[in-house]
Image (cartoon, rainbow, N blue to C red; front, side):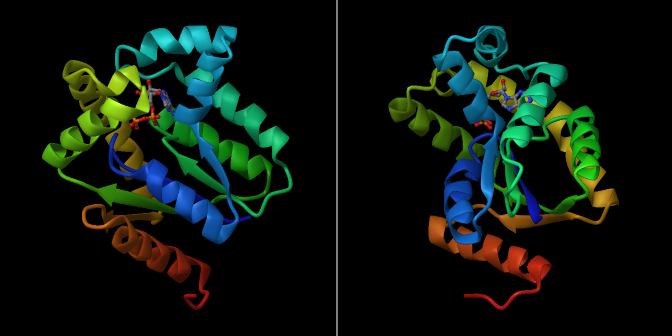
Length: 196
Ligand code: ADP
């Protein structure tokens, strides 16, 4: 298996790049944000619990997210690999993911981080809020809260993978296609395959 983590703050373009990456590399897209929004739409108990955190810009508790990822894994056993988007978001989640992958005799190949300035991020999120129907993108206070959570709880995840020599930054500003080709270049180096 070839497992990747797409890392970066809210609004950095993980979802956009993920759609293109899963198509090119045949990976399964595992976005915890999308899975949680689906649970909310289905009005499941997990969704109801998650919604109260998400509406405030807080993280959903680790055990809820880890359990959800675990069960998603079990439903997608025969895959070439996963593209993790928006997960892991805490060091506890990263450690749980490492363990889960080890049990499946695989590991994370690379963590690619999209770098975007905060000014650009707020602009993108408020813009997305106009069309996405996501309530957490329309309120600037909730957006600021998500950045604070990102810097306090998610930034340490970068260090976790830096220590394992798996972390790499990619410039996340410019055209979607240009960013995509930088991301692909980093992946292909890891895969040691010639670029198509
Ligand atoms: P964004 O990165 O733009 O904030 P996401 O769709 O990744 O969007 O996440 C939306 C919300 O879902 C987060 O603010 C958080 O409340 C919740 N969430 C998503 N993934 C996780 C996770 N791995 N751990 C905890 N909470 C999560």
